[in-house]
Length: 221
Image (cartoon, rainbow, N blue to C red):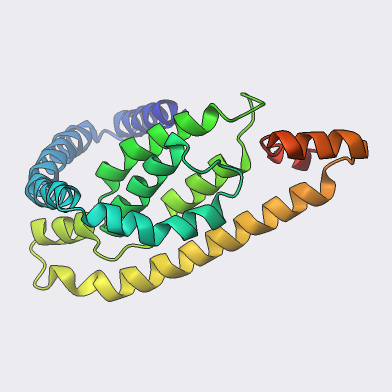
């Protein structure tokens, strides 16, 4: 889908440039964009390598385990339908820790692994479970203590104070995270209210077996 959107934008730009006789400007913009992309990428490498190295040092020093212990109760509250000790919990904690440090590139692989583990708990492989929706919302709107990637971009473009955005980024991501959690809780509540009631014996049997809650499919229609 995304590839199709980008291809459509390129083709539209090409057609308009050809119609208006601006192919020289179109060609220049293409090469300038490619040059800027490479320049920004090289500028990000140093900062990302530094913070990923710091993450490795923190892991070896046991700091990540301490962060995981602090975030453990939060994860249990946000993901009540994920069994304790499940491999997805570890990936979720690592994803949240990386997002706290503004390392989106480092957080993405852990988020993907967490999704894969959550899929093993999914009774309906075609519909996302509440836990998967919660992870997606938190990963998108994660509160960020140190926006390392944005600082690197500002530094690369010659900002006089690259770290000036730390306070505003923290406030914005905190509000976004609270909004994401509130929306997630609301969707969970609506899913529970709209879930068709079953026989009491069946409900008690499912509770005894610790079955995974049904996904948000009950909100369809």
